[in-house]
Image (tube, rainbow, N blue to C red; front, side, top):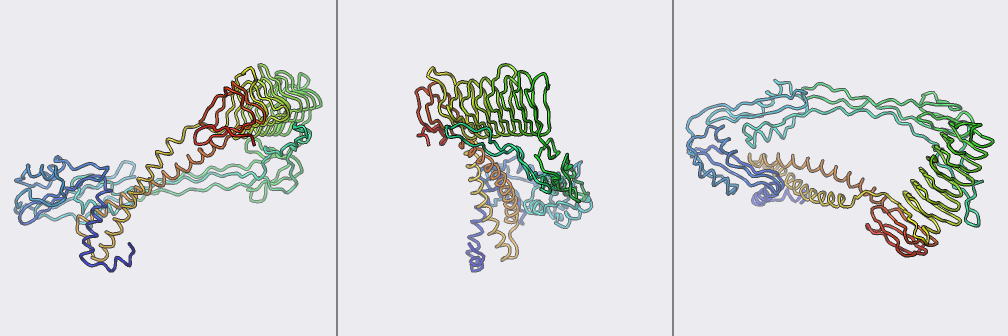
Length: 560
């Protein structure tokens, strides 16, 4: 219904709309309601039923209000009947109350932390003076309540007759802390290029393109300064200072300079970018012309390390950059933030531990625990190892994976998995949380709240238009308008929270279903496959297959 169509309504039409608006409003309001009217012929009681999720008025609540109003000669049986039937129409429960005259009064209280103010309105009795909006505003001012006053609560206290009920009439605002400084790095040295693949399917480790060079004057990082935040306020108007955002130093190392505003780091020389902690440097390459052994000891370097020989048993190489080994790693330890390239292979026993922030490239892996922040690309085979790659695991050439556990965030690609002897081998891709049930529940909750919000918005629009065209609304309808407006605001906030939560879950579910396993040879019996939350066991040879997660089930398709 448009505003123009509302203008053409007759008085009779408006009365029908008002009745409909009241019905809609009562449907979304939480609790039942009661209303007392003192007339020349006696005292009348009206009790309305609750909404679909609210609670009904009980006789104890009615009797308490009658006691506070000092109503005498009450027909208790009639009161109980009205409470039980909840017809929503006024009915006589007591005779005229005579000349009793007691003024209504107000109590205002403030919480200890001054973040909330509470209002209690006690009604007049008989011919006494009722509490007015001006009385409440004066009481709030006298108690220094000047911030966050909720006018609809005052309306509710006056119009709804919430006798003796303590209402939160004002709320302070918490300070919004400032945002900490953020450093945006323009160069990511942990993301090297891909190696070339030879005609026979093996990987050419002589052309890895691992080193990412920069030129003088190139921007390496930009700092976004910290923000101070927004102050809060108590209900008495006192300002609450926010916690300012923390500053972060744009720390620079060798061959890096800051611009005049100290917010931009630029390269001062040609070389390789290294980020260690929050310090950015341009470093050279540290070369070892033989093995990492007793002649060198353990190696730690803030940059790229090149080992012309091998890493021997028990020795460690730690680098804030890439590591390149021209021989092999024999039960050694490597930890690097960048890529790891091993020309021959990695053989572990008791001490070996491999962890790379970037991709790992080698010919074979045996009895090794390996963790990669990017891809794991193998020239021939992975045997009896535990391999975890954030993105993909690719085995070229012979393409063998046998024994152990292989995890990849996105894809596992090889030629043969397991063995004819049914060697236990596990492959896992995607993420594993069980999100579908929670997503379905929240989606239904969102839909239900959208229906309630639509009803509340229609009721508010109709009541406000009638108030504008008629000049005022009856007292009971004003109370309904105040309550529906409050419910409307709560529904809007709850829906926003639900929408944000659903977006997060959708992103996680999409990621969990993105995993896949591609085998262009044979998957042998004894191989266990997990993609996202779905699991299957291979009991027969599966040649030339691609495995994916479709709606929580693993689907086997031809290799492509």
